[in-house]
Amino acid sequence: MILAQLLYYIGALLSIPLLPILYFQGKRARKTIPRLQEASHHKSGQTDTGTGPVLRLLALGESTIAGVGVEDHAEGFVGSLAKALSAQTGRPVAWEVVARSGYDARSAHLKLVPEVPAIPFDVVVIGLGGNDTFYLNSPLVFRRQMALLIRALREKLPQAPIVIISLPPVGAFPALPNLVRAGLGALVHLHSLAIRRLPYRFSRIYFYGRPLRLKNWLDKSYTIEQLFSDGIHPSPLAYRLWAEETARFIERKQVIGG
Image 1 (cartoon, rainbow, N blue to C red):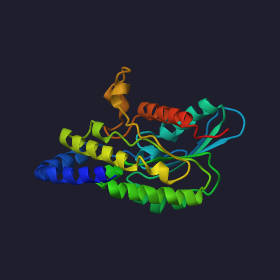
Image 2: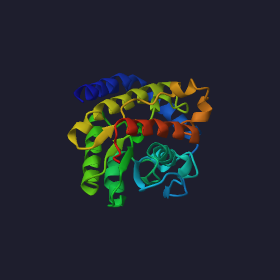
Image 3: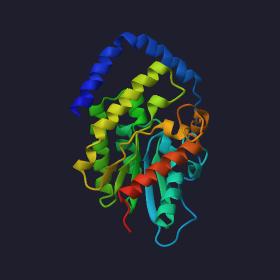
Image 4: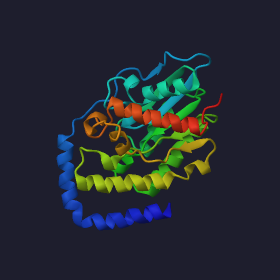
């Protein structure tokens, strides 16, 4: 944690001469990136596969959890994760989304947790980190806000296992200029380092700290255009691949009980 914060300060100092370039590049990128809406259909749903007791999934987070880039959550991360979990467990999965585009960890803690229904969930998934990176929040701030968010969720859902999914690969977003991409990519890596030990502070908390590597997907003959809807947010294909990786992590860690 101390190392991540120190590297953040060093990076901030080194970037001072580049601030004018970063400012104009960022301004140009904002003009060219289309503004996509959140998924407008089905904030909750259930898979049509599986038998036995329904497995309840809650997903909380930023734009990727809110389904920006797809019209229906069934095509986004949450719907894809529900399908993957149903295939793994053989059970139907009922899912619910509590998410907002543009929210960082602080906003999620203050505004989203109150919206979480106090009912038993078999697994809670948190998807944050992209906006904390775009807002240039320090690793210390990100870790503190994530800890507050988890504590609030744990008070509301004392028995539910909580999975923090891998942070978005901001350093690989094709819509960003190279210099901006490099700087934000380094920061999201520091954010990941900052929260990697959070699971040791709480019970039944899991962090999938392995970075998302687009190269692994591109090696499967997918193109970069197929993986992004706007150069920032995932396409339905990327949401599915990301969800399947997350489902394998959940299975490997035996997050969900029988």
